Image (cartoon, rainbow, N blue to C red; front, side, top):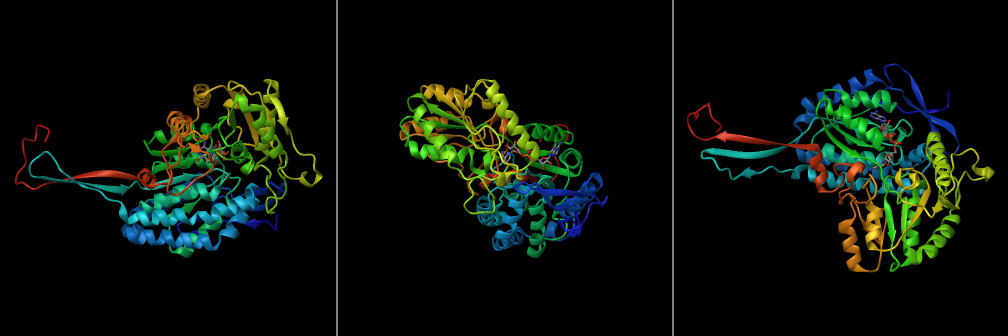
Length: 495
Ligand code: NAD
């Protein structure tokens, strides 16, 4: 293990190993070999990081810094991320196996969140209230919550962290970050930029390790005011329950089973590309995966054939190479889960139109690859249409008319995203109204922006990230009452 790259945590501004001096290996999904090590932290590390964040929140330069200067720090961090985008993207690809082109695109876009929320930092306003009681001057203030714990998944480690970090810091909170144990390296590398940008010690801390032993300790710690979590819905429910013990604020960004709906009046070639980008980009490992392709029956055969032909041509390979279109999946347990779902789908009577296993190309033998897989004749009651797979498996489901499309689209416990492909403007707006999901894309798919709120309906989550409202997720409102009159009224009744 001597030549593995070692990444360290940052607590109270200091680079550190874990208290127990244990390490965890980080494995490259393309080679199947460990390439780096991260500290294996436990409850002792969690306490030290939270106490550091708490000190920074209550004392020291951050606690008294003007919002304008907070904003400047955020913008400086954005500049440094832009400078080091290539380096950080390469670390992410080595850790999670997603295409370098995808990770680099995310890294290049990420500074915008720091610029946007850096700009918002000094525009957080309360108000003077026109109050109905005489001689009282009453106003509201918006204040930060305190220590925020940010827990992130493995699929887009830095982007999903940024969605929490930028608004949380703009609002004046301090942070403890726990990245996924599978993909912690880019977050630890980011901390060098945090230092260079000049954030005071303790404002941003990291701890790395397993969710069940470290994550739950962070969530339940009494000094933590808020948990911002992205991950699976079962973990999200455990986080929600843990946070409830001390009535913490929570944001939960969870999974999905998003419908991507193709009407017969759509531009079919565009819809086919939308279907592909919905499920095979990032090897299906995205929360917004359009894993249920709903196709109007009159174009069902045409769309199915075209989607299969397009997916068949996808080039699997080294995610670092520009010509690769589909990389490996991130973890070995995830690959097993995906392959098991293929058996489930076959067992339930879905017709396998493409893929259905692992590729037999010897060049790919060491990596954790799964074939782009498409099942036809799927009924929405099958497990393959109901449960989140988080892999490159597309289920194609036929429908007759608008009514049935809405019914199938909404017949899910999730509500994260959706796509509608149509050339009929009335249909586009009506579907956008009727689909119960936090995002509806019409004639496009997988668009996100720092300006647009993102989050789930139903079991896809609570709260929104990005857009102006995201900063409110990290603020609380205080009402201040100033008595302008002499004396105190009857103390035994409500004023
Ligand atoms: P996961 O739920 O297994 O893990 C997410 C994070 O939670 C990791 O850091 C993990 O260590 C931690 N964790 C695990 N158990 C914990 C516990 N008991 N207490 C506290 N923390 C714990 O998710 P994953 O497998 O890393 O990521 C895939 C999931 O994330 C998918 O379900 C996907 O849909 C979801 N996701 C959602 C979004 C979104 O924005 N809605 C984005 C990306 C991924």
